[in-house]
Amino acid sequence: MTTKKKKAEATNILGLPVKETEVIAAELNILLSNFQVYYQNLRGIHWNIRGKRFFDLHVKFEELYNDAQLKIDMIAERVLTLGGTPLHTFEDYIKNNRLEVGKNVSKDVDAVQLIMTSLSDLLKIERVILDETDKINDEGTNSMMSDFITEQEKTIWMMKAWSEEEI
Image 1 (tube, helix red, strand yellow):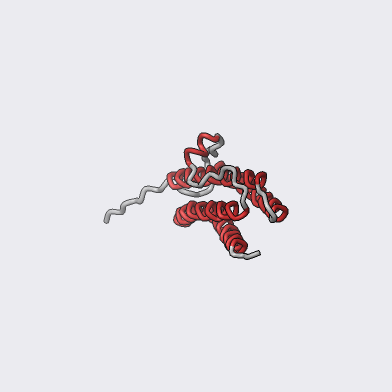
Image 2: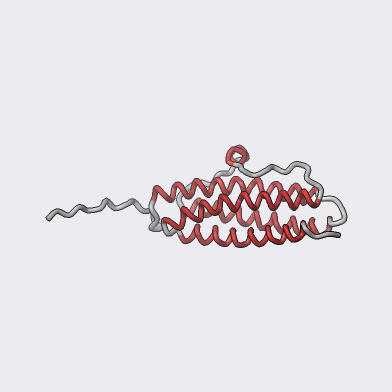
């Protein structure tokens, strides 16, 4: 009777498969790049918003960019945790960007639409990462993506409700 030993897959210090973890770190870097563009969009609309809703939106956009800044740090630190190197140049961010770049957005409706579209695009990237991390039991990244998705879906719902409001 012959027994074949299955070759053990190499794992990292976290107990995750090395090859798949490298792919996830690369996907997180794509997400990081897109979050940096989202953050800059939020800063721009925060600075440039005009109109009767200025006071409410100015504060809301600041809340959103502060949240994005925290998420950027979380994503970069997760890349490091997985053994990768976070992207950190604007050249890298632009190269990996999938979001619309908002330039001189000052109208409330346009700003909210840009946010909803950006969040929708971020959700697509996050769902790919969620699926990949689930396959290798990467609970740390999976949990982070799940939390991001839950928050962003709620923000889209709230922005959609706001944009349908009539004054």
